[in-house]
Length: 177
Image (cartoon, rainbow, N blue to C red; front, side):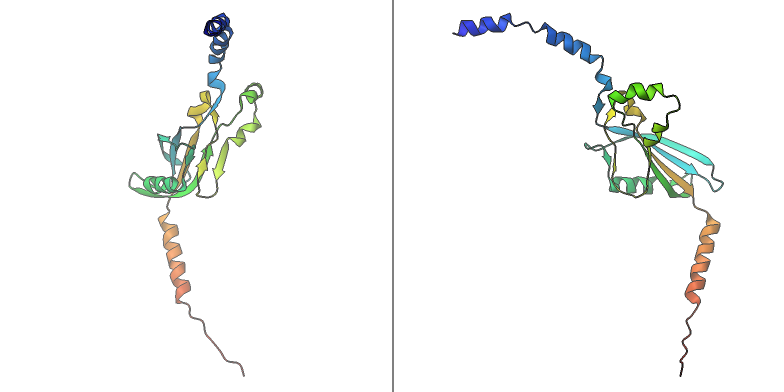
């Protein structure tokens, strides 16, 4: 009985599986994978709305491809000062290419692609930022942009002055008969 089982195993031709795997290896870079790291850009804008400094670094993500709220807050606090100038957070923008492999031919054919706006998403709240799975050849394009604007000292002084002025005005009460 055992001799029959070994004879059957040796008679099965598995060469088609090997050839399929070899052909499939050519397309491995077109399958979606989890995002493990992103490029983190810190852009610094002065009071004249000119970009004066750009910093870039590779930032590793958690196993579920997210930047947690706590990580984002610590990044903002860590990077809000550059070249001894204090900046305020202006915007956070996520760039995540989430094309499906079937969408690539259509995406390449259209030269004036309006669909690219879906990749650049402004984050309106400070919360967890999730990056969706990306085709492996586009992994290095995923990024998070933290844009800082220089804190204007004149504006800050004016606000302090108006706050003090409002606080010093007293309400007068009158009685009516």
